[in-house]
Image (cartoon, rainbow, N blue to C red; front, top):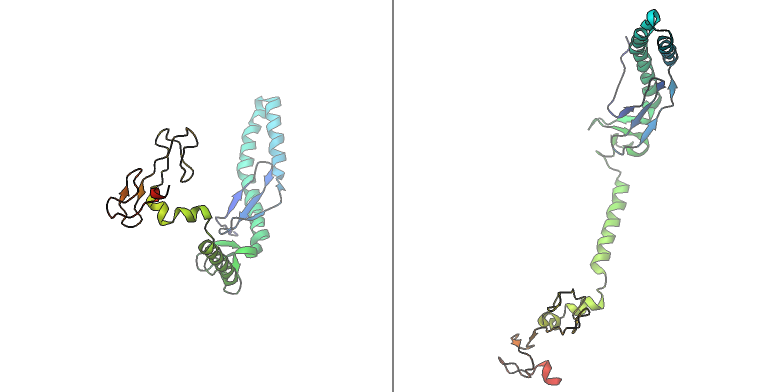
Length: 219
């Protein structure tokens, strides 16, 4: 009795009308589908089923015969079809001796190393990917900051106490504005002394802590 070699990387698409199988790569998931093989037994069992429904009685036992034929003869034909399918597509797949995965020769097999590309990646591909990744990192690292964002990072902006929402209507503020774009309320941002960092009360021309001249003294 011939043993039927089988793998886990296949789908059985067979029906009562015939046999068809899909074999796919464990690594990339792509694969091949065999051509549909019509089943000769489907014609026989179909005729027996029809005889059973038309005549009944003694011929009604044809239904039992139909089931027995399907379970025995069909299974035999199914095994034969599967064996032919494995032989047809076996040259397109190979089993990795390290991880035992079945992979496609076209995309996932490293011929030079005798291993799948999961175990022995293609160094040229990996190098190209690494260079591209490094280039993207360099672009982000050296990208120029927008002028508005640069202004927000100055010491003056940090000390001014930028608000994220209007204190009157709670509308979000897009930037360091003087008036709310929704309700028109004046945004009272805190002011701090540029010399000592102390908070400057409104309408004060000199810092109450160090006596330095404030920005309000020039208005």
